Image (tube, rainbow over all chains, first blue to last red):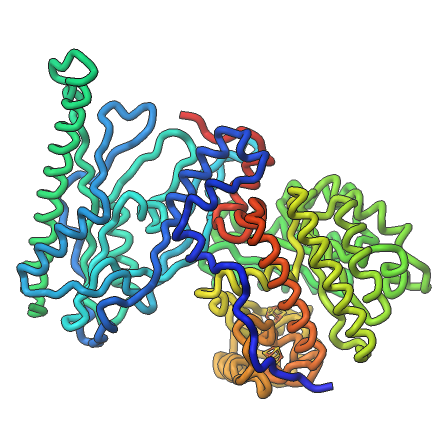
Length: 271
Length: 353
Ligand code: SF4
Ligand code: SF4
């Protein structure tokens, strides 16, 4: 008997994980019967699925030109608290700046500086983000458990010509990038700390990149958002106005983070 | 092994490991040395209290000396206990005999029940030989009905497999595949190796190869005299062999370690053009060396087994995905499944605000 290689093998007729995660509803639509009857478990499931956002490692902007001399990681420029909580004890509800909106702001500022951020979700070779963790109570003991697997860091935007990459730490990124996950109804966020962690990891592990990390400034809606609005229609309008103002302030603070990064790049002689 | 050598091994392991260092007790039969095991585990826990290391411990036993007292200790000290058991009586009694040649099924079944009662998640290891292959599916169904949830099937690759016995094995694996589908559809939670790993090798295609064993890189074996080897089988070769890569006192001979690693990483001769090389378990240096005498030569039996299990695993995946089976979807696509499953079983004990 001798080992005989397989000449051809049909692609299996079930998807790979990233394909399924591209449609997270598939997992929410199909839950084991016992889970569906358990409200806490269903809450945990939605929270945990949100942290497994699909970040396909495609290179739409061409390969990153790796210049070993170019390794430099910018500090996290602090504009905005980046902290807050959601859940039943959170008095002033936070307002998150979505990844899409943030990337528009970042692209605008970097384009003004002469960069072309055409690479999207480009894997930064050699940088691995450890699996996310969360604290759960099992048999009366609170334990930190790890779930998922180590994943490569996929940079949000890349200018391949200048070997410049950036990552924006958004709410769906929070647990994946090391922020931890809560299974209770309260989730606390500290985006600045998570962004600093990402920057430190890149500094430690990457080669050939100038790297910037930005974070959601997480401007909260102030406690007096209701003002004098009395009827439900006015209350809705007041709420929307307060949210819009918070978003505008978040964008302004993010823009300041990016401007500081541009100054830093200039200081580095990169642009 | 003396306690002093074992303690030196703990210190050595903790220096090499950033997180928790896994310590596995291998034999013969490790429970012949229960006293030593207790002392080693206690030493490890003392080191943890002093902040000089973190450990997790594991033992695989044939079960003969497994008793309440040892299980109390294992549970108290958080030592994982796995047990070898080959399934139905015809399979178990064929190769697992007492020293005087007696059968072990009746002797060991109560021990397995005891283990499962105290540790419901204990792994049960089933080894398949050519003459026990006809009982494979029935054996696994028997173990599942007994309450075993972590079922690890492996082959005795060194046995005298023939085309005929491999044919029987193939049929049995197909039967086992049907059982996998049936159990999943019934909502039963279980882990059945090798199918889980094979399904994962497709589902997690983007990172599967990164998880494979790298000989002499992440595991070390320590023999009773304190000599170091790349993995457990190599301890047989002895300290004068090319497989000894140092000792606890003077550390690892990095040149030897690098040579062994490089040798095991060489592309296995028939595998370079194989369409399933990325999903094949051809990289176990221990197994290759044991069966072919070389870390980079694969055994023909392993080759056949890999092809058989892959085909069955992909059939399972296709069938259950087509039905959008909830348990299958979450087990294989939801990275948080182990946590959610644990929470489900622990009841509603999540922290409340
Ligand atoms: S199936 Fe056989 S030939 Fe193919 S990679 Fe595995 S051992 Fe090599
Ligand atoms: S038994 Fe094989 S796969 Fe496991 S650690 Fe040893 S060489 Fe690696």
